[in-house]
Amino acid sequence: MIEKLEEKKIQVGLDIDVQKLEAEKMRKGKKQG
Image 1 (tube, rainbow, N blue to C red):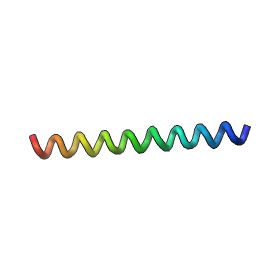
Image 2: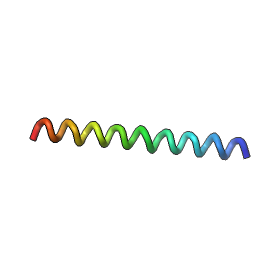
Image 3: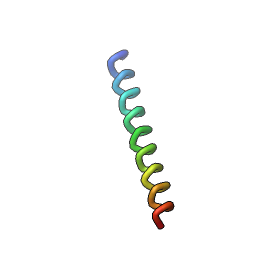
């Protein structure tokens, strides 16, 4: 049970990191455009 919870936490963390990267890309793209 605990191991699965840890895995989920890691997955969520990765998802958040990806979203942050995407948001930064969008911001940079808007500045350039």
